[in-house]
Length: 286
Image (tube, rainbow, N blue to C red; front, top):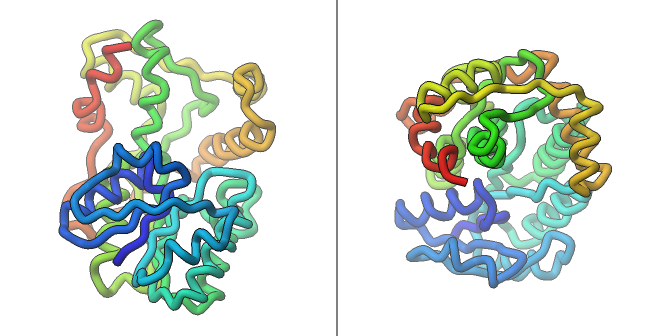
């Protein structure tokens, strides 16, 4: 039995889907059963639980051999990861695949990367066998920019001309599934990227060519970016975390390209061009 946390999110739901497709038993941990209908698959058991309530994690981990730890992006991430790791240790779980992030480091000045790095360290110190997955930014995050692309032909980000090797969630998940279902991934750290590092201007050109509509990238200052998020009612911790993350990208640290997807899955990683083709209708309909 494999446990998948964060099972209703973009990555979690795809992991449940791919694990179900290879015929393994999956237990999907969700905070709200009402939202779990979308991940109903053959061989998938849905359980309700919450990272902030350790007793629910103990119940969810009963009879589980391996787990995917996909913590919510939240200011309480370190505490919640710790709750899960402690519960997993007491349950006798054999292996944790930690969904982390490129650049994860417990000493990082970037909050999100620091939180992931602290979670990795906690797992390593627990004595539980582990695999750390460190993906770069998700291609699927561009779907949240679709409204301005479809209505105005523009999208806004504070990235300057930074090159970023965005990776398709489907490829991240394919590596996760291999790490869960095969031996030989114990103690490994996988930095997962797309096949090419692109600037946002280059991505805008690809969008223009593939959806048949002029699309431009508008670079915004970090201050304007923060002000916009504040106007939308986002909490201060999130605004700061995202600002730090874009500073990380502007420094060039998101441009690394690895061969992990091909090496682990024996499939070439999905290009940004193919991602746009697969989701073209999203960028056309709003």
